[in-house]
Amino acid sequence: MNIPMVDLKSQYLSLKNEIDAAMLEALEETHFILGPNVQAFEQEAADYLGVKHAIGVASGTDALHLALVAAGIGPGDEVITTPFTFIATAEAISYVGATPVFVDIDPYTLNIDLKQVEHAINAKTRAVIPVHLFGQPVDMEALVQLCDAKNLFIVEDCAQSFGAHINGKMTGGFGAFGAFSFFPSKNLGCFGDGGLVTTNDDKHANELRILRNHGSRERYHHNVIGYNSRLDELQAVILRIKLKHIDDYSQNRRRVAHRYSEALADTSIQVPYEDGKGLHVYHQYTLLHEKRDDIMTALQEKNIACAVYYPIPLHKQDVYMDAYKDIHLPVTESVAEKCFSLPVYPELENDNIDTITDVIKGAL
Ligand SMILES: *Cc1c(COP(=O)(O)O)cnc(C)c1O
Image (tube, rainbow, N blue to C red; front, side, top):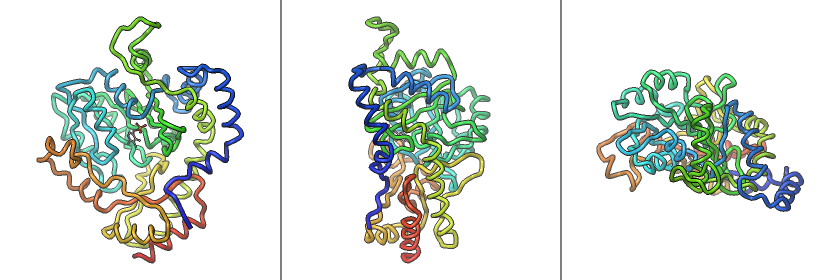
């Protein structure tokens, strides 16, 4: 047996005829930069996400970066975020010369702790970047209320939460901006790098379209220093096809997660906690246990993939360590020592899920 963390091949094979035909058509069309598929995908994604504007960019990291540029955030500004995320969340803050302020996480949802956000707000704070970690929405109604009262921008990091929603309102539609990634292993993944920024503000949307295309409003007229950060036409072809299946993918990720959680319910493992406020779309299925390393060894011996997201909190990373040496975030630090993630993808079969939980129970 060999169970991987993600299975991109079977997803491709299930859509192969449609993808191959559409790719060939785009190759014949040869409109490779900001072509018709990018435009169509932006509209389809905006419709699906329930936002006014969706702007395709080159990656999720760029989506976060360009959103902060469009918000006018720069040197001297503080941006509050979680230390328990992929490095890109903080990199974007550092790119614009602002200071990431890391606050502790909630021990159950593993998302940023809103009480800690409130404590960290001061006169320099300009924005908050909540990460809908592993696919579970942050309590955005509470965060929006807090940030509106303090006049702060929210840039939602939706890299792991495409299709997650709170009472039908999609992540990416609550803050001033939503930043999405289409890295191949994400819930909606393309065949390379890709990203998207969402906003309901016409002016910000216009700025983002200029920023991603060399600061150019009109060809060869450059108003600001921009970037080369466009969503690729061929990636847009794939995204348009996969977008039609995203609800089915989310439902199947939840099937996998709930089958794991039921099987592990009566063990000493802490299974993912759904706070009941929003729909968790399980980008990752992440467990906590003191004997994580032993359990992972048992899985690996059976050729079952597993991984630690994330072993080192951002304030403990080499690149940030010196600047944050006096900061102690006990929940994050303890979770990083106990967390491990199991394979989760829409195509994962029930028999395989049962084998995995049997191996874990054996190891306990
Ligand atoms: C993947 C990811 C990103 C970065 O997206 P890329 O498309 O790889 O640049 C940012 N934030 C989080 C939480 C991610 O998981």
